[in-house]
Image: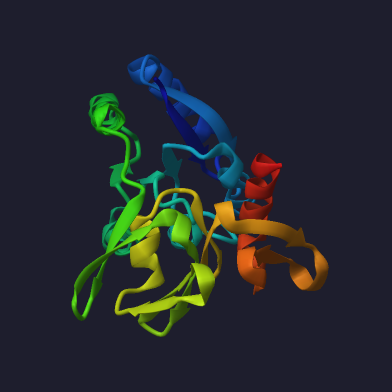
Length: 238
């Protein structure tokens, strides 16, 4: 098993230097499957590539690395900032990146980082198959929900409303981001307010900027920032 990696940097020589260093220290553990000089282009392609780790510069035009990390809707991708600027460390922590490397990147440091991520993936792969349920806290305790019973989850302020089969609903005092991190990759964000179960998609509609028809006739809008990611999922399901 090799990790899939993507590099984003607006300086071509920085991309090639990091690619070369990764080949030197981690050729047996990691493969670079994509490289981009603009965050906007990368964000359009990342849902298709599904990288395990994303190495990105911070100081870039249009959309910088911090903005890109906050937009990115791949909860299982580990984001590593690679930058010449020390003063971005606090911002990196705020957007939840996995690690932070300073340019020029030290080969030993890079090797240790890749080895750590690789080991975590091996341990995750060796675990028994994941449960098909999620435990959600309620006023009475913890309710176990089958993934197959969840159609979508809607954000309402700091609450999340689970829309379940047969018209049932459950309101919980956690954010949508919290549940996105807990649920498997078959649940994707299609809008700031909606996290959906891709197994419940019946139809993709192009009109009015894009919408998804789910089971039980739920019609949900797709936001512009999530449209490419949704299209990538539709392509995989088709």
